[in-house]
Amino acid sequence: MPESAKKTHDWPPAYFQRDGEAFVPGKLTRNPWMADAVAGGPTSALIGAVIEEAAFDPAFVISRYTLDILGIVPSVPLVPRITAIRQGRQMQLHRVELLADGNPVAQAHVLLSRYMETPEVLPAFPYPHPDDVAEREWLMGAAMAGAIRTRPIEGSVREPGRAIGWLAMEGEIIAGTAPSPFVKACLFADFGNGIGSATKPDEWSYANLDISVNFLRMPLGQWLLIDADTVMAGNGHGLARSIFADAKGIYAYVTQTVFVGPGKRR
Image (cartoon, rainbow, N blue to C red; front, side, top):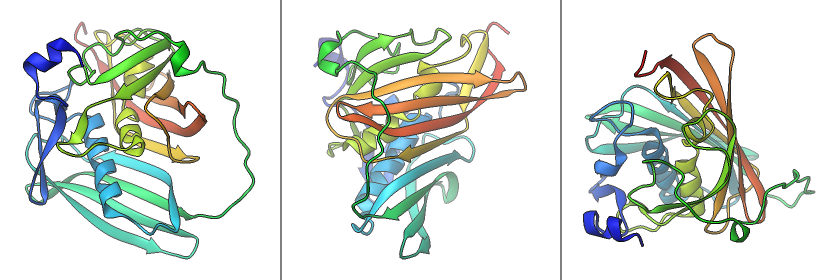
C-alpha cells in the first residue's frame, strides 16, 4: 500500500459509492478530457460490476462486451437498467444502460454464448511472466491513487507507439466490493488508447468513443497484461488495438474507436 495514498485516500480507494439503486461517482472517476464528467474506465468498470451482479444464466459465458459512450457521463448518481434483447438456446444478448437523471449516458451490450466443451485453439503467448518483470510506476496519473500497480515490459505511456505491461488493481469499483478479474478487465479495456497512443496528448488528443472486448475466456489471477497500439488513417479517427492476457495466456482482444482532435498545444 503506497504511503502517499494512505495519507490522502481511504484504503482501498473506490470509484463509486452505492446509494440504493444508484452509484455515486467519487473524485477518482474524473475524466481527463473534461471536468465534472466520469472517465471511460470507471464507466466501463461500473457496467462490468453491474453485469456481474446481474448473475445471468450460468449455462452461458460472456463472449463479447461492447460499450458505447452516448455523451458526457456526468459526475452525478448513475442508475443501471438491464434489458434482455434476446434469449436463445445458443446465445443471449443483454443491454445494460447507465442513466443520469433518467437519461441514458452510456450503454453496453453483453453477448453470452452457450457453454460446452470444445477443442482449444490458443494464440501464441510471447510475453514474460509477471513475476519476471520489475515493478515501477508507468500510468502517469491514471493509477487510482496508487491502487493500480504496474510492471512495464515495453513502451512509455503518453509517448507514441506500442506499449506492453502487466497491471494489478487493488482498489474497488464499488466501495465495499472486491472486483473480479472480469470487472478489472472492463476497467483496463479503456486503457489501450492511452497506453498505446499514436500521438502525443499535447499535440493531438485521443479520447475513445467506444470499447469492444471479445473474450476467449474469463481472465484469471491478480496480474493482467495489456499489449496496445493505435493506428490512424489521417481522417479524424483511429483504432486502438489491445491484446489482453493473464499468466495462463491470452484471454481477450480489445478495440476502441478513437476520436482524434487538436491537443493543448494546438
